[in-house]
Length: 272
Image 1 (cartoon, rainbow, N blue to C red):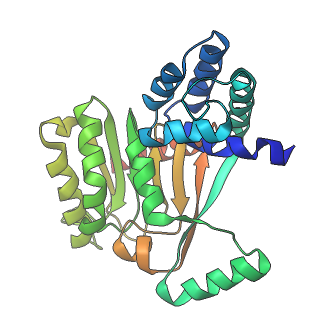
Image 2 (cartoon, one colour):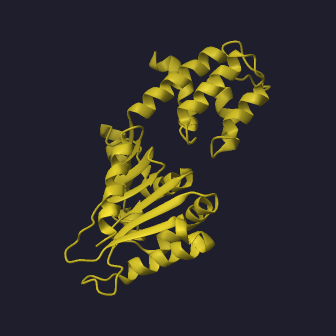
Image 3 (cartoon, one colour):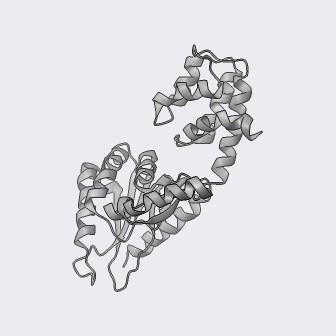
């Protein structure tokens, strides 16, 4: 069975780029069942995912379309199977995310080749950018240590989100003048986001722990309460590209539990 479903895995991965992956998978299945055209299926899926160029090749690989872009007779069944796989993946989905420093890349390759190791993990910086890009209504950026050079990578996504009417929450530490551990790096990073927000600054909320002690230690980037990176990496060049870090990419309903926790922390920080 696993071998039969293998050609559908790239399609399922493509569905996960959509804000509502299960809905788009169901829509594609229904469209094909109603004798929809190949171009129509491509447009339907392409309008919901970020990598539109992959849609046709992935559908051909899955057997949904033939080499001429026409719908195959097995397309409704294949799309129904991909829909079911998408539902299962959303309900219980996580992927390993690593920052692999230069000194460890060779060792990781040997572990993967000889012992299975952690397989081919996702890259921290790339994963965080992908999460930020998927936000359509709410983006949460949380870490005790930020750096302007990495936050500049996220700034275009924040700008686009706020411009379209969405909102962004930043949770960090050491922003206030009176903070015993005031962080110039964090201040500079938040300034990058405020500049990106421009006239939509009212939809950018910043909350900071400014008392003694570390206070805030989680590292999370979350989009729309349904997909999130959570791990050890701070949102800095070191955390996302140089240090040895480990985390996970979470999808599905459980992300909403994390969202509620982060919003509760933000509410508590507001009066403080």
